[in-house]
Image 1 (cartoon, one colour):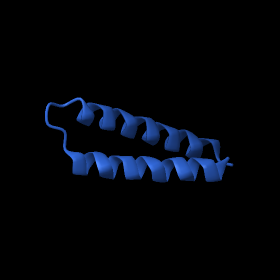
Image 2 (cartoon, helix red, strand yellow; image 1 turned 120 degrees about the horizontal axis):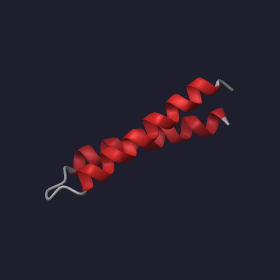
Image 3 (cartoon, one colour; image 1 turned 90 degrees about the horizontal axis):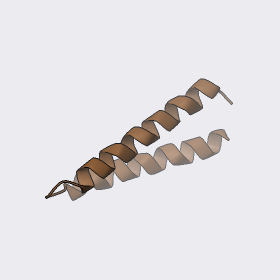
Image 4 (cartoon, one colour; image 1 turned 135 degrees about the vertical axis):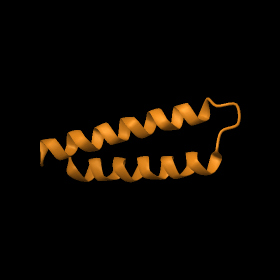
Length: 52
């Protein structure tokens, strides 16, 4: 397991989480953007689990 790779994945996962929260808190959230962000977040989560 490459510690730097896992750390980078976690950072990207957290950044996506912030982007999703920011978009959801807007008066008129872009649901398509939220869906894409959540899909990418899930992909990163699966990659993190595979690294463990």
